Length: 254
Image 1 (cartoon, rainbow, N blue to C red):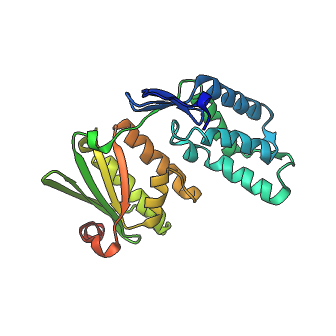
Image 2: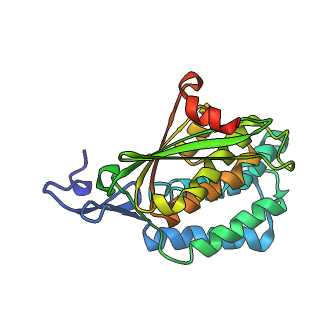
């Protein structure tokens, strides 16, 4: 242990792994110098619109290193990561490739976001005024349903799928059912600890990590995260075995 890099007395503000932590306000901040350095890397990539996978990976790695202060970074770099992985696999790490339009759009959005301070407030679920339990389910060939319980009150709601989404992958429909439920119950969810239960393991895994494995899930996951941030919701999600997801399943089929 290095004495020069250690603090031998209690403090409320400290730096660790390149980030600034404040235990009084429960905030994690990305230092301005590091943030602007990464923003400059993004500007250079956008200027040339092509680079080696190694160079792109270096920039993405710098972004992901700030994930504690920037939790949505994995969702916001999905297409960039997919493009560099494909190029590195096909042509190696040191051959220049042209960044696809979807990746360039993500880089532009990130460049704009990094123009202002990046700070994440870590909210403890126990500090929320109350807890809301949302259980959702999707019947691929029929509709979606959900139940919301807050204290001693319970609400139920469901709808049939529009023809445009019938036949979509069941995982996409399960995540869409969650988004629809949050949007419907939004007035009741503000400033709550929202505990979500879903019988789809992929939805639980992706939203818990704030990253997705399939492009079709990306826009839905982004909207869910953004809506929860706007409502100041502390979101937690857990898997509910299908045999126990009785009421929401019933609503989705009626």
